[in-house]
Length: 240
Length: 240
DNA sequence: GCTTTAAGGTATGCCGACAAACCATTGGCT
DNA sequence: AGCCAATGGTTTGTCGGCATACCTTAAAGC
Image (cartoon, rainbow over all chains, first blue to last red; front, side, top):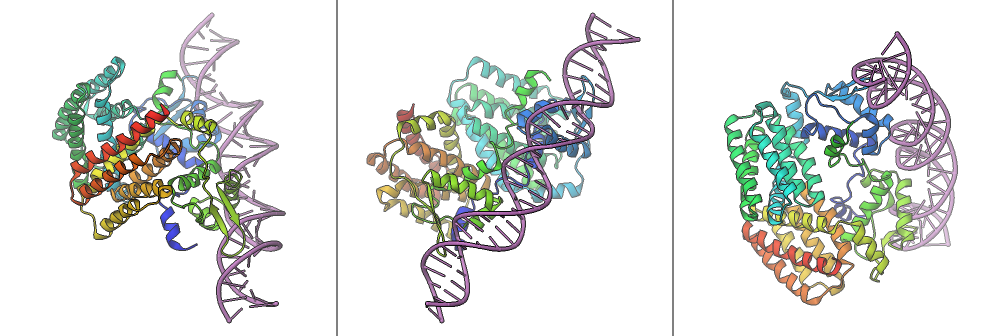
């Protein structure tokens, strides 16, 4: 087989899974933690439930949890009302870890893809009628970011954006957004949280949700684009 | 563990892989065929190369090829200059197959996600300078669609869009687009190819590439959106 | 027409993920 | 105090996918 044919296919033919099935499960649980779907101190589902959700055996799942435990990300307690508890580190990543993250991920790729997904989601949300339930959920998520303690801001911000992605009406989009956002959060953990940016961000959130609820796709799109560019510029500045 | 916590996580915690690793490989090779990356009568990479690309053993790969062979999608020939040849069926899918496809895929999800990715890709392409190589590649792909025989139009159209996605500068975006486009093609195979639509489509392609090469993101975006809406309306009309 | 070479086809032994069953620990409930 | 239920922890045997090595086929090239 000549080389060019292989080259033509390689964008599609990725390795079927990176390493063993175990690594994929690890990645997914890390994603849950990075997204803050389970907050610091909260409990993951029981091993039996997690294993079923991920469709892996409990034995393999426990291998994954063991790794997370060794890294201090979770802690297990036995007995009734026990479980696996998330324990996110309070300390910023050291410079070696920082360098690892920046070299491991293609920052430009992530930022671009994120913007495309978020902008698309915002536009989709504004373009179709939301049910009262959905509007309520969005408003709630926005309100939660407004009165967030500084330490929990990133988490609630993530949940707001995740809600928007889910309300886009495209489960595939929401799924990819969750994945890419987990990576973005890992990058954001490498740079300082500036209160000034945070206030700016909050104004954009409000305007964004307003545009979505008003059914103004163009407005929602441009607001979201601005919002994303802001984060992107920040990250490029600190990491580039 | 209460049910709501599980519910909160389930958007992220998908099964780690649908079935065995074998099925994932099957899906990827099907994707190559559906995208037309290997045209009718052309050869796939050798088993040894494919196995390495997918990072699966040759034994498992051969299981996959056996399935494809049984469905008449590929044909293997031994000896030097042999190989595994793609043999796409000329006959339209029967009504049972059609029903299966429409129930198996969430058509709204696919169409929305596709539009978000394509529109985003077009905008990104127009927003950054393309190298002479890249511009050339785009022009070539466009030219190929212009003088395409009817039977090969869909394939060249796919390659043009794929090129655009790759030139977006976000490999993640390109990868997701490839996946979603494979599904779109499967749906398109269920409906008739109308020459009138095709001509319209071709005019849009020209305008789109022009906007991209002119560095006009807004123009590219709107052109692409129109282009996607057209296909979407067609599919919704026939399948909805 | 023989050799070479690149491809598909086959056989063997190993290891990791799995399912299933069981043990150990904890805290609430009676 | 004792029981119960829900959780993490452990053991065992099975099986699918793996690497590896080898066999068979067919066309190019001398």
